[in-house]
Image (cartoon, rainbow, N blue to C red; front, side, top):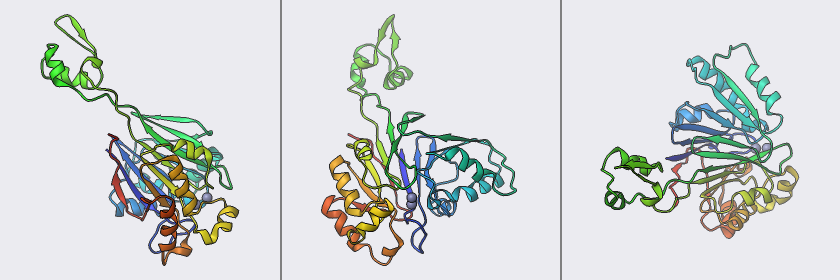
Length: 303
Ligand SMILES: [Zn+2]
Ligand SMILES: [Zn+2]
């Protein structure tokens, strides 16, 4: 399973309809967040993601992307959490997150590890890797690519049976890509499995101008979540504040050949109507979707 939930989709300040940035990703037995804007914990309750978050990846440290951490940590402490929490982000993650954790008088009851990531650095998760991609914003900022490991190919039980493998636990071993011994003969997984199948790839842009490194990293991705702060009419503002327009984000997604594109991080100035933004995005990427708070979907395995 790979389940995404948008906790917030507004840029800079919350609106009545949209909270600040946060994405929940539940995958296998892990729950990750990408950013944790103010109010994220309440959105997690509202949308039923649970609080069992093991890692938070911050794209950068503008307040709209991380201030929700402070309240979330206090709630976890009060709930008696004991499991450690890993926090990741670009410079100055080490000093800034350390200060954020110590702010106030509440004792910190569980272990928190802070990992300041350099562009290109990889974080290994069970069955996947998260790579930090340098993006183009006003302060140090990272996009993230989560790439699952290849999965063993399709299991051909008739081939296994023909080789004398009895049905049962040995089938499971072979399915997982582990060789087995039957009647003194070793049977290798490739004898009974089809070609390896690719895992899923998810890309999160964070805040950025359209960025070549991110476009490269997003090539053929299953899902790209790209910021889309402005419409064409506010292009100058997008350049000035180092954000993207919906058109720019969608054109990048089309060039990268991504399978599914979700735009997020919308300026509050469009809260009363997103039709222009959507129309401009569709001209570049017809299947584009605008994310909204609570949008939840499972990313299917590629065929
Ligand atoms: Zn932002
Ligand atoms: Zn920002």
